[in-house]
Picture (cartoon, one colour):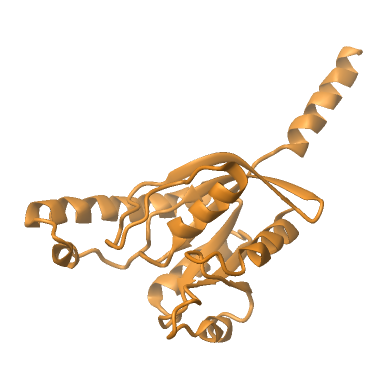
Length: 207
């Protein structure tokens, strides 16, 4: 194969297999890691990170690289970036009811604050974002508005996820009404409800 032709083939090969950096954003305990794990396990066989009921369990960006999703004849290669939960402030006292000592809680609060800063900085490296919202809570919060505002300013494609629809007090329609300009998929990451719809939406938007 002539060298020039080889270079052309090589460029085509890598362009065709470029990984999309997909960021998972949202408030603490919205279900980002559960969704990231569901996606990673379904398509790669292993989880991204640890899930916990304690707020700010994810305090650094957790990555799973080159996850290949194949839906409806389309193949999408992704780097999954599970971001720390975004919050307007972190109070160490919110960790005390979970059995942490004051010292442990203060350490966790500092790590969580650093994680929030890191998640915002990672916007520079994100090609698309899944913004996860808890369908049992009011979606029109300062955190959600700030996340979506930053993503929009950087022209990063967004898919909204209304998570926890398996819970009796879930009202995903509130998310749809609050942010009608975005694509929305209603799921239960815990139960696996509608994850196929999520995968279809991801491949439709990003391939």
